[in-house]
Image 1: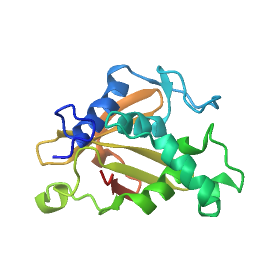
Image 2: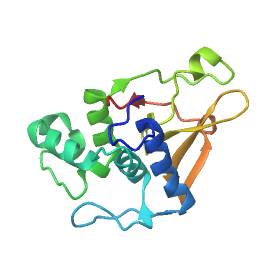
Image 3: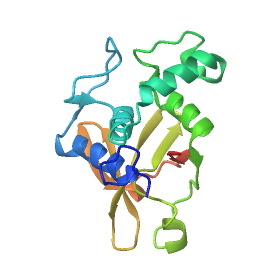
Image 4: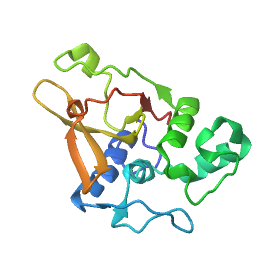
Length: 180
């Protein structure tokens, strides 16, 4: 068990518990630009579920993404050569680039009812959708439906929710596990 913040709870469960607070608080979906980068606690978008979830395990996503963007700006096409720490860490394509570089990449195929496949989808994993016109992300929950399919914690209009991951028909572009 990895427990980097020494709170007697495994880091992946810390991530899930922190992300789930978005659902419990019914965080309103509101996209905006904020000085300092962070929106108010009662507002957010899908990417805010990610940094808030990781923060529960003591991981400050903004700091590590900002640092990587400053060192490797050319890898982040969404930055357009001009890093902006007030927004860069809150963009799905930027989170995806960072996770591809530093997290463990896992299967993007979700097969309901296939135990071997479903065991690869663990609590705290990050899922990314990058279809044209639909950039979205969220965190795999520790809750599952009867056949083993996990729930997914995310924020999409009108507010944060926890739904079956299989309810998304858009292909999954990325499935990552933080390297603790």
